[in-house]
Amino acid sequence: KPAADPKGGVLRVEVPAGFSFVRVNNECQVDLRITGATSAVPRADLMCEVDSSTTKLNLYMIGSTEIQGEESGSGQEYQLIVYVYNPIGPQAAAVWHLNTFSKWTREP
Image 1 (cartoon, rainbow, N blue to C red):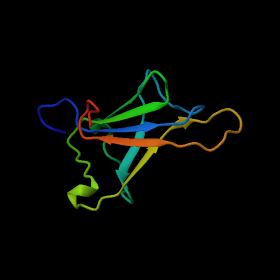
Image 2: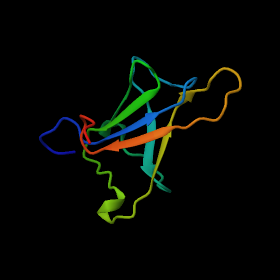
Image 3: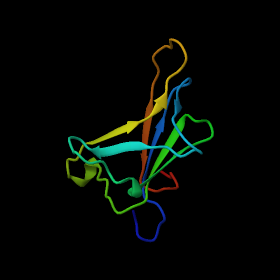
Image 4: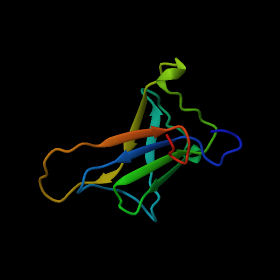
């Protein structure tokens, strides 16, 4: 994250209707790590919030850990685990969305 900003980039996950993110007071937990790593990104470097619809999770980068995209040439692949409540009963397959933003304001 830039030193002058309170937050860095954002990963946003959106789940289909019927699912909802596990949360306490709209705060959530995730596991984000480099694929194959034994340790996750420290929780102190992340801030996880669920919006009022409970179907959108915003994961803000707030610490010193750098998440490097493919354009950096680092070749890092990341694994993200989010925790959700499943819908009640059978449901047709639906699309989950993952969006990334370089600014915490979620501007393009």
